[in-house]
View 1: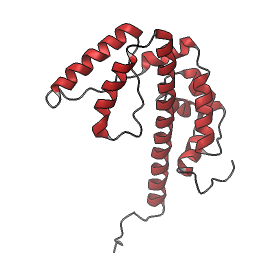
View 2: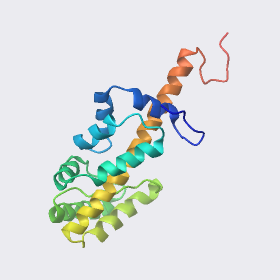
View 3: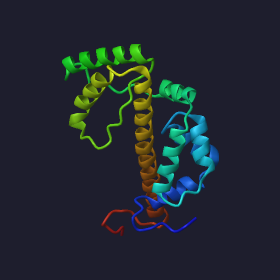
Length: 186
């Protein structure tokens, strides 16, 4: 595998992903996008030289999803979390109704990638997104839902590599006998 460049955010995480057993890699990828053919394709093409190459492969595999693959992946996608009933009861009611209307119209959960939005804006973004997309025709919405799944998968892959990276760093600090603490044991 080529050496990681200085711009690679999680080289240890990528190295761990590249060297893990195929079945384990597929399982991790299924948590990013629930399509077995997609996950197997990405796992089979390892090793990836950097994050950009992995994300490009994920994008390509997502674009190649068949309509049946897309339908199945959307069916396995979790419904977006609703705010607690007490804190935003009007928003909760509006979002519940919007989700129900969307699922009735299109036959699958509403998907929206919220990477890059601060937590305090997510509720507004979801409500705006679902309301604006309810007017789409079914084919247009399938294209948008596929694009959102692609974006969700990219973010999930990036977070997966970050977790691997942190686990590797933690393992190294444990193996070396040094903790991250600035204090020395006596």
